[in-house]
Image (cartoon, rainbow, N blue to C red; front, side):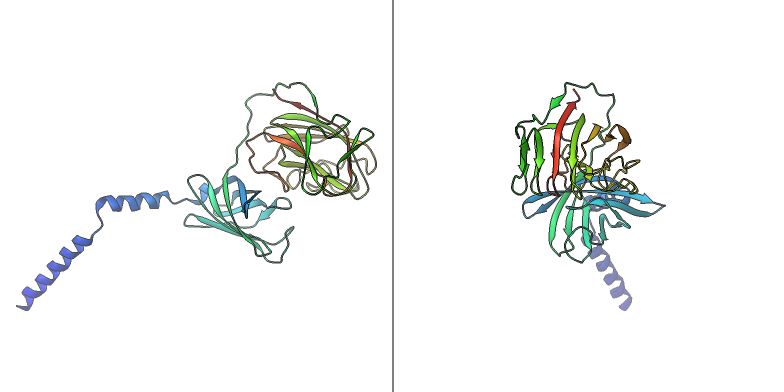
Length: 326
């Protein structure tokens, strides 16, 4: 009798187990979802990021690389400052995170970024050193490769030597004015942005800065070529005169120093840039990896304006000529 009851009990358990077992189509769906979970290799590459600061979009940028056989490392451009290294990017079950010490930001805590890959790119949250948290989204940065050399169009005088026609001020009060044919920012204030936007071009600018001053010329509004009063004997740096800020280091500091008229001749084709300073080539056809700090946006695949920094001290320009590609 006991034996028969045991057999009957086992039969009931088996029947119940079959009743609650997962249907074949559900098992297939779970299997598909598991296989769709992102892998570390999916994170590798460059990403154009937009941070939502309470409704105000702020550009950012991230590059992730494989170091050795298994460690992800990176480079990150935040809302302020330049590109900074990321010692390790953690990746687990489709989600990633990293922390870096505060540098240009206010606050004493680490900057912390968390995110996950999505069908459209990536998304996540960022906590700044001051404790403020924001949401962000990102997309794969475009390669911007060109299949043929550009054919150049006609030169355009962006500064007419008379007034600010063709330009708009952005930021604080507009301190820009034209004095005796010279575009002048006598003190720190707003930045100046061209109304016209461009893709590939050759740009000629003639400028003069005072002792201790700092400015820059942004290509497409996203990549800053630095203008700064630093001694010519300084070791070249991506943060000093004629460097592409935080990314590309010039071969030498070819500056004439303060209170002297100087020139930049810059050619930008895709991501490839050449910078000639006072007749000397200091950056020759090098790749700009991504946006620099202070960029107007992170939409690297779109045309952008010429943008002159006016919030770091006095600066003057007497000539701004651009020759766009056809």
